[in-house]
Amino acid sequence: MSHSIREACGVCGGWAEDQPMAYLACFALYALQHRGQESAGIAVGTGDGGKMWLKKGPGLVSEVFPDTEELKQLPGPLALGHVRYAYSGEGRGPENSQPLLLRYRHGELAIAHNGRLVNGARLREELAEQGAIFQTETDSELLGHLIARQNNPCLEEAVAAAVSRLEGAFAFILCDGKKIIGLRDRHGFRPLSLARLGEKGYFLASETCAFDTIGAQFIRDVAPGEAVVIDDGGIRSYQVLPPAQPSLCLFEFIYFARPDSNLQGKNVHLMRRELGRRLAREHPVDADMVTGVPDSSIAAASGYAEEAGLPYEMALVKNRYIGRTFLRPTQRMREEGVDLKLNAVEKIVRDKRVIIVDDSIVRGTTSVKLVRLMRRAGAREVHLRISSPPVIDACLYGIDMPASQELVARRYKIADIARELGADSIGYLSLEETVAAVGLPGEGLCRACFTGLYTIR
Ligand code: SF4
Image (cartoon, rainbow, N blue to C red; front, side, top):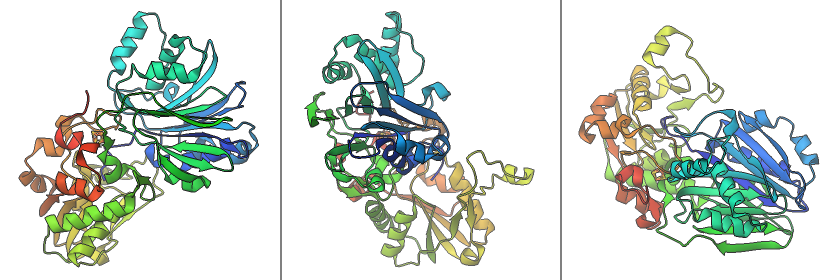
């Protein structure tokens, strides 16, 4: 998969008196690390509204929290965590790392979110005209201002009133030092699930893989428009926004979510294998072997191979130890755009007709390199098979994607894309087959970047 598309954030948080909550939030963030690598943070609440503890900073979870033992000693039944990848348009500065810890008339408020408001700029302008001062460019700060303006000591009521002003995609987790509130927008663009933790505790996270990591038991997904409140009184649920057309992000299934997560009860790995099977039926080609682009396309590639009756080979190997700021060592390599994160195995591909399965193509720059790598390793033919439809439009809902005019499927007719990428052929899975593989009603999924039809804008 091209690195020109990224998830925007991962959130988690919960309440439990008998658990080391800061420590568990840290390990939940490790499980959500794929959703954001620019910053990480944890806020911890005392349970009685006392001063909250906060640590956050740029980098990976392991860089921000090198000493997990320190977290184990932190008292407090409440913790809230965040990993972040900034989307274009939102500032990348360190002030935007989350959770935000705000102070207002009724105490402290920690807020973290995943997603993007479509009316964020308008709301910001409106609040600024009324004298609000913003220290970050985050939607979390916007929500904080709206909550403070309710001037209501009851956080549940203030949150319910404030979120009615928000339009767009969001999964928020908030903590006032006494309780945790998790809520999703009324379309449910971004995922948020609920689990049981310990004897009487509960935990919320963007993906269920975080629950497995900390030994929490999945209960259910938070419903679109629902707010879940967790404190020493147990758990309560409110429908704070009227339910609307459900629009869970289809790309979560195709690429973002971890394969061991379940989304709306569907295991992501099994669903991706089904994408591959359907891709093989829709776009067969005479070939000797199938390989997948590590890691996110391996499930789809194995499904393709299974259905096509071809061997699956590990012809592309990923180097996991090349850092994010990696620079290619020689000028020639830089000019040729050699990607040292991936290596094609010559002994496997020489003189072979190779099918490369990738989960998506955005700009096409990674695909060009992949095809070149294969040819350099001696592949006789290189066929690209994509386990999702062509991406033709940008995301308005918090996923960092290039502008529409940079998308290869926007710039060229499908028939011409193989030539542009240097491949012998290309086949994209149709939208109908993609939705059928997910196994949920198409109208319940956001498909806007594949169709150009936005639920809200
Ligand atoms: S536009 Fe695409 S990436 Fe954005 S929420 Fe919808 S399906 Fe997901």
